[in-house]
Image (cartoon, rainbow, N blue to C red; front, side, top):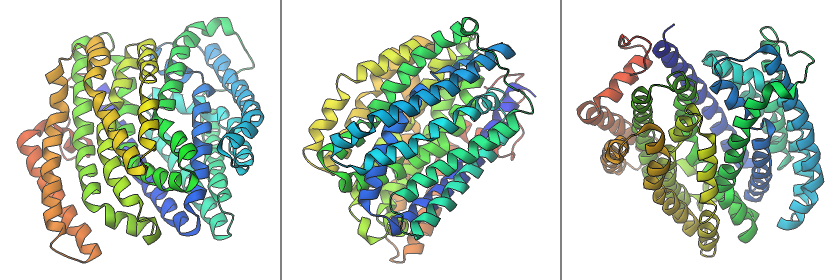
Length: 488
């Protein structure tokens, strides 16, 4: 199968997986907010930040090194597999050791027990991790998608069951453990039929992977810290209940990009890696990726801004009304953030993990201070602070990251964002007008949604037709253009 066809197939199956899993997760949050308190979600947010931070160490950046390197031996894969397992055990022991100190920092004794429980994922996840990476490397996103859907379904069932039984925050913990267990079991079952790790451990054979992975791991650690510093500081300075409101709103805001972006970036990284030596092709694919993501994400976020009161009422219930302005402001943050993801795929495809690391290290100079300052004025100020930080990074990220690796000019890059932004502003205005024509809750969603889709289709056809063509190709309504082996 040509690269373009494999890529479009990967996009299709990743899309299906992303949509289905997001529906499952939204249903899960909607159910759990009826049984759990904002403080429960606040506690879990703190726990998951610590766990997420630790996840960056789990494979030491080796997963992306496996995708990047086109030739790899069975012995190298076996050594890397057991390195993951050993690292997982060490991380669990470290989490167990530091959990009392983290609980003391937040003055929440329950955090210690919760961290140890969720930390069990480090003893489970490494056994299936490499098998997932190999599926992604070969663009086999159908199998990966089925596994992802199954794990999220398990989480929904388990967390709902324990929430109904009034287990409180433990319902979230058990749901997380169920998802990791099901995912690892299915990956191991699938993976062992194709690659069985041998009992070998030759570090000398994987030095190249470790060298690539160290910068990638460092970049992940610093990047994760930058992306979650708001959660850490809100939890410390404002408390677990405000953090619960903020984290639920932020999770919801990130859902659209978690549907759309992985659909493109998971496929884009291995695809970009295959054309890494052709700079003109690399630049063209990257710019199209930015355009496709912006053209899909921006209208969704525009609708969220318009329909935030209705979304919060339906999903979370009236006691979560404080999340409405947070959701509206963070939607702007989410839209801007969604345009940054392809830059990571571009850097990895060019083997520039070191550059990504130094970029994120540089962000530490001002991101924490900006968020800490806004925390003094409440959640709304924090939300606007996040928007300001993300907006200020657009041009610097182009200059230091995009231009240096692909040669794309500033206007060439910004045009991929500007056209979808123009279209989305009009979509928001039209949707707001039609939403005001009815007081019925269901009617608001229907009228706003239909108006948004019609406006989006018309304006993209006029101003952004290539996006429409790519969308029709992906869903099979138009034959793929016969460009041998290319993505353009």
